[in-house]
Length: 254
Ligand SMILES: NC(=O)c1ccc[n+]([C@@H]2O[C@H](COP(=O)([O-])OP(=O)(O)OC[C@H]3O[C@@H](n4cnc5c(N)ncnc54)[C@H](OP(=O)(O)O)[C@@H]3O)[C@@H](O)[C@H]2O)c1
Image (cartoon, rainbow, N blue to C red; front, side, top):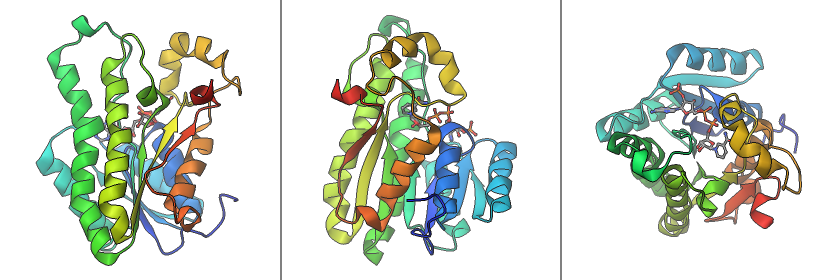
């Protein structure tokens, strides 16, 4: 399926955390397939740049500023603002924004770090889905794609918090599939392995030994992960509910 396919034409999509990293690739891919994309993140300037880039490529996008670490009132404001910006209806939500954490011994992690990670990685997707999925269910149509991680399927010393938040996302995905699927809303997740983003360079020392063991021997590109998101968001995945699709160069298999 080429990125220039039109399988998402007529759809609207919110992509959280689409001012950087993987989120930009997802926003661009959904727009390239015809969706009107609500780009979102904390940084106005980076948001405006992503919107300009999508429009320059012939797509349609708007920006909604969002601080998903700021609690329930802000997340509910973002849900309303994104729905309005999309013209009153969101067909697709991609829960991508997350706080990435350096591996740190458990005893050295301040309580605030624990709270902040769960606020952005767990509470915000929970509140967004709670705000948006019922409207999708009322219309009988919608697709939610949560960005989990291979780390949510595995343990790693010093990574209990980040890995734990991603394990929760995988679990939410299955429960929401059961809750909303019968009313036409498909909920799935993508579980990437290491992705070649700017941030990933910070984790190079931890990642290289992993890459050396992967069947693919390399990271995924953001575009490769975005392609899986677009698939799950599209009617090509019409009978896929509650899946956690690994895009990890084979890490979960070996
Ligand atoms: N990179 C990897 O190797 C990898 C591997 C597996 C899974 N993942 C998952 O992929 C997703 C994207 O990761 P990434 O590597 O692209 O991360 P990233 O480069 O750090 O980008 C994170 C995005 O989330 C936004 N964000 C962060 N905190 C936010 C907040 N409080 N409120 C609103 N937006 C916020 C950031 O935008 P602003 O700064 O503008 O707010 C940015 O757009 C995450 O769910 C991550 O867990 C990544």
